[in-house]
Structures are given as structure tokens and as C-alpha cells.
Amino acid sequence: MLNHQEHIARRTFLRRTGLGSIALASLLEPGLVRAADSRSESDRSSVRHHPPRIKRVIHLCMAGGPSHLETFDHKPMLAKFDGQPMPASLTEGQPIAQLQGQELKVMGPQHPFVRRGRSGLQMSTIFPNMAEIADEICVVKSMYTGQINHDPAHTFFNTGTAISGRPSMGSWVLYGLGAETQDLPGFIVLTSEGGGQSQPISSRQWHSGFLPSRFQGVQMQSTGSPVHYVNNPAGVGREQQRDIVQAVNDINRVRNLELDDTEVATRIKGYEMAFQMQASIPELTDLSGEPKHIIDMYGCRPGDGTFASNCLLARRLAERGVRFIQLYHRGWDHHSGMKKGAAVTGKLVDQGTTALVKDLRQRGMLDDTLVVWGGEFGRTPMAQGSGRDHHIKGFSLWLAGGGLPGGTAYGATDDFGYNAVEDPVHVRDFHATMLHMLGIDHSRFTYKFQGLDFRLTGVEEAHVVHRLLT
Image (cartoon, rainbow, N blue to C red):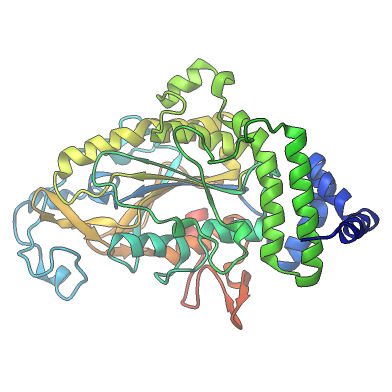
């Protein structure tokens, strides 16, 4: 507890050193201190190594593992051999999740495929709306990963390793490039569910790991208050709240002069961000200014917690300078009832996904945004009753924006959709390519922790898929 003289001395020190003025300036005029913040970020991180193609990433994460065989990878051979034994040459000695030791039989595609758009890109009929953006997307049919169960597979896709505690890709991007907003977090996550088993999603999927915690993702609620405790307590006005934030941060800055601790700096930034969010969050979620035709295009009721509503918020977040946005839809885990499950879940994400891509395009934002659609792995060509098991040797995702060639497919799996056999793309290759599009050389983008130079793509080989970018 400070006595009166110490209190006066501290206030005098703050006034004379200008720390109080800096705190107030950061609240009232963020632009005055943004340059200094940017320089300090540049000193610590690799920043950009070459001209970027994109400014931001929107990751539409289809949690649970959507079947590539019912979405974007047409395999007539499955229909031909439906119900027959799966070729042992493909499955012998291979990692299998829940079908291990069981008789493996081929399951034919549960939904027809049709050619969409001018390009004739083949897509499942569970996505009637996505037909409108067929010429905008590039389907990567040759993805593969290293983890066969949900949580470690999500961790692998998000962090490049199955080891818990590593930084997520959103945190890496925010650390390297910062955000283009001072009023909102630079990395925001929203979730929705429906259509199948809703596998839990751990918050470590958007954690900053060993990076300073100011770079971790912030989960916004899809219904109700978007951010808990963002509103002022009863009887506390904005001027009073500014005084409180200023006083707390003044004290934190004095303490940080002694410690030079990144976590103290995080707390200072956290208080400042929370103060700004008290004004920015209500404005973000007030959709009264959105034209009716836009709301109708997304097919949602604002704030209804659906994936479509989250897609509309994603566009608004992107407009406001948020660097990395993840929308999880938990509902793609179809161990049984694949035919109905794929159709129901597909319907829940189809219109919102389509609207987001179209909306970004008509606003001139798709060229500098990378939209990623896909799950943590695919599903087996073999039946698991009326469903499909987890599969990691070959699956699909699609990319749009950033000048990527639309209406195209890259890579291929074999005739049964089992192995990625043509131009295989590992998850780490995806990370390297995403960073490249952001202007970052993944091999030079490191953070020293416990004496080692860590990077998102790890120590194993990772490649930028340059052919995908042309």
C-alpha cells in the first residue's frame, strides 16, 4: 500500500516522464503511438520478406473432418466397387482410426457430383449455392496430414505440430505482421455447430503458445454479448473508465521499467484494447446499416449464432483491419449417417460461405484476402456402417482470393480417394504457402524460445506450393 508521499512521488514521476501522457495518447489518438509500436514489433519479428499478395486470412474450419468424397473429390471408382472389399494394397499397414481390425468394404459416393461454373469444376450437389463461386475457388485435392484423431489433428493443422503449447498459425501471423486496427484484436475466432457430432474445440487451437500472449486469438460469442465483460459496470461512464484504464496502465508502465517483461506489456495493451472494444464491439455487431439484400444473401438473422451470421461478421471484421479470422463449424464428424449428415451440414455452411466470397469480391477485398475452407482431415473410402472413419492420407480443401486461379483443381488422390498421389500437399506446405502469400519467408520467420529458433513450419521439410499460385 502506497503512503501519501510515495503516491505523490509516483504521480510526479509519471507526469515528468510523460508515461501518463503516452497512456492517454494511446487511448485517445492511437495513431500517435502506432509507429513506435510497429517499430518494436519489427525489431522482434521477421515481418515481410517480399511483396505480399494478401493482407489477411479468413479460415472457414469445417471441424470434424468433412468427407472429400462427398464434397469436392469425385471418385466414380467408389460407385463401381460399392460394397466390395477395399484393395488390401492400399490399406495394409496404414493408420486407421476406428476401423482397425475390421473388414474393410468400399462405400460409394453418397451424393452426385456435377460440373459447376464456366470452368466445369466438379462439386457435390450438397453445395447448390457454392456453384455460384465455382470459378472463384481452387480445390486442393491432395492434402495430407500426420494426426488421425480430432484434437491432435486440429492442433497439427493450427500449429504445425501435435505437441500442445505451440503458437497457432493465427498468432504467428499476428506476431509477424501486427493488425491494421487498434480497436479490435488482430486475431478473432467464432464458432457454430450443427449437422453431426460437435467435437469440442479447445482454446489452445488459437493460443499464442510461447509467443507473448498479446498475440493469442480472442474468441467472440456468436450469440448474446460478443465479448464477456466488455460493457462498463453500472454507474461507470466512459470518462471514468478512461481514468481507471489510464491509472492502471501508468502503474504497469512504471513496473515494466524495472522488469521489461512482455507479459506486463501485454497487460497494458490488454487494458487499452478492452477500453477501445467498449466502443468498437457494439458498432461491429450493429448490423442495422447492412442493406437487406446483403442480409438476405447470407441467409441469416443477425446474431442468431449460425455459421452464416458468423460469415457476415467475418466480412465486417476484415473490413476493420482484423488480420486473422477463424470460423469453426462443429458438425462434420459423420461416423454414421453420412448421406443425411453431409447434406444437413452442407446446407448449414453453403449459403454463408458463398455469400462471404461474393461479398468480399464485390467490395474489392477478395484480391487481398485468402479464404480457406476445409477440415482437419478427410474420411475413409471404406464404410463404417453408414458413415466413414477418419482419414489422413488424402483429403481436400479449397482456397479463394489473393489472385489464386479460380475454377481449378490442384493435385489428386488415387482412384479410391485413399492416397494423395499427384502433387501432394502437406499441412506444413499449406502453412509455408499461406505465409508466402502474406509476404513472409517461412524458413526465416522464427522466434527464439528456450534457446531454439522455432518456426510455424518446424524443422521438417516444408515447401511453398508455387505451382498453386500461378
